[in-house]
Image 1 (cartoon, helix red, strand yellow):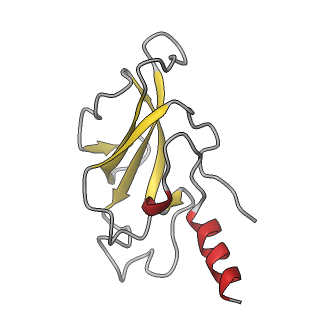
Image 2 (spheres, one colour; image 1 turned 135 degrees about the horizontal axis):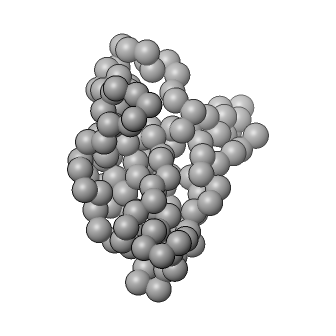
Length: 131
């Protein structure tokens, strides 16, 4: 069964900007972001969630077309793509050595204006096609 991580993606997304090479990254965490602009990059490369002491490294984000409307004045729904210090990319033998977080998506499958399939859905689809 396929499911998306963030079903509310703005169809007027214009670009996915990657801040690191994604060729060898298995998954990234897709996180919705309420941004003050349509295209400006996130203010900080690292973001500390108030609920967690671990820092998220922002490795990518989306931009919106100039005609994209705001969800409220001065607020635009965009996506960021993040990694944490204990994700597989940085710690191959760590907690996510053989699994992944629920918000994981394959960076190779991220498309503008389309909800991303969960990493779990991608793995399921691949295993089904091998049969």
